[in-house]
Image (tube, rainbow, N blue to C red; front, side):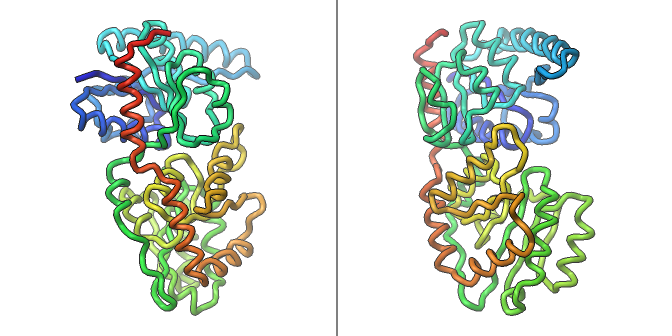
Length: 366
């Protein structure tokens, strides 16, 4: 039995793969602790850890000297808090899943001589991981072609992005039958907090579909609370069969039951699409510094599992045209589902757990 500390920013994109690894370590009889930030109270209530450690963290702002100094003091405080926690836990290794909350505890672990593994879920090595790479014993990747990862000189291994147990369970379902007259299940979601853009784009794209097609479409869509009323009105006026909610806790099962997904292209979403094997129109979150979601969507499209649609160039009319094209040709969707499944890593969590165990057993010190 070994003890591991997992480190992740308190959002779903970082916590879900960490949760999957914690579940796998539990099956192997290991003890798991989680080091994260305050946001875990919203996203990580069911995290399977012996204890959750809230570590002070901040993002330094080089453009604002006052904020930079304040963030630096917070990070130093976080290193001190993490040092005390790690001293008490005495882990065999630590694993960081990205995000600025990982910086203080991972740096503290390195200073204490504890082996560390970084995991990158996206097709671009994140800024926190880039800063921490010099302190890591190994770098685990979801994509073989990960921008900036080529600069890492240590052990680098493609493990895939771990997904939760219920995603693995949902992956056993075959692609739903798609006949010429049967229902078409369309799933729309925009991450753990939803996406206003999808509420602006998708309902007015579905409303003008040819009636013979529109009657077959059954939409399941995640909406922000403030968008529910207007989205409901658009679908009601168009006589579209729809189910709306601000959050679906059974999203993997709904994904498995869908013929087509329209979503953002965050790391967890792309990983789950691959494991379950479902085609998707991916609309990357615009404006991010590293354009990681666009990189994820690009590789997914290149692999044949879906279609990249840049939000800046997308309108309800162009989306409607794409939907008519795809929904009228079942073979295209079925073929994309097969390609999506070929890109999935259903054994990612086992690969990552094996890597972490090897690093811990080697006992290397940076």
